[in-house]
Image (cartoon, one colour):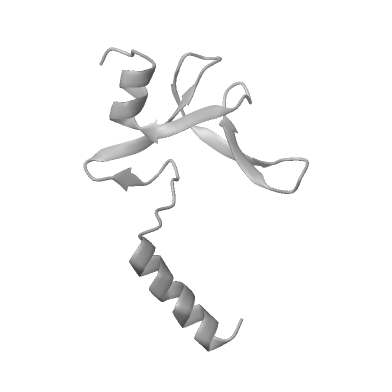
Length: 82
């Protein structure tokens, strides 16, 4: 990629405010967590490659898909008491 395209991409990133959602990041004061519907709790994740070559986050304990969101939103949506 040329330098012009890299600088343009950096400028677009500043303007649009794209935010990557990864489990170790935070949104404001609330940390981003992963909830496994199969285990029924907030869990650690691991990345695996899907059949189409993309990576996806799965539960480190059971290997099923996880829901990713802020701790507050996950607790509200799945009705988890603190």
